[in-house]
Length: 288
Image (tube, rainbow, N blue to C red; front, side, top):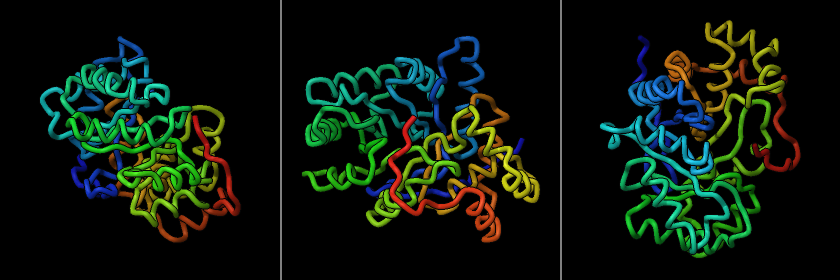
């Protein structure tokens, strides 16, 4: 079995070090017949250095958190656990209960990172207050956000204690590069890494187009990897993006871990830029 315990770490804005490759869990836990395989996949990912596991109360209405909770039994102290709160639960009336429910499903006494899943009607200032209370109570160690665009991030960090936000989780892959125009540079300037979800794009025509693109296939073949591994290597190429691909099988977990070893050349990157150009104007944030 291929092993990779040396996946490079990236500091969050509070100094905590997390691997640049973690594990996503969207749709995991939905199918009871796949439970054992999915648990083994998550545990193998931790063994291979992908010890950040991302979940959310929304995923399967808690089924994903229940699955992760089983997977991390006996290895909790080796895992950086991330969960997310619904926007309508992110106010002072609900955030503590939502967090408690997530902790119960995850069978743990704290979250390493708690994210606002996307922006809703609850004022950001109220969400910050709730997050800070959870930190004070030891239920979460740090907090961040997800699906916030540049203007939202600027507004957030102008608020009291808004600079305590350690990351922003957004959609990012070769076929969706809009954040490179303003959000990614802004976060880099503020020492706040992006956490990229769907780094391989969602299943469907876009993903098929990406992995079937002649340039992607040609560069992948030259590196003796598959197109999915190439796309993952591209996503984490800068050392300032944390990617959280989902892998429901041990074989896919191994492939993801091996992607961290791929060193793309300037020629590779130029060819990929030509195939999928960098944005030249502001593009609204992609959200799925």
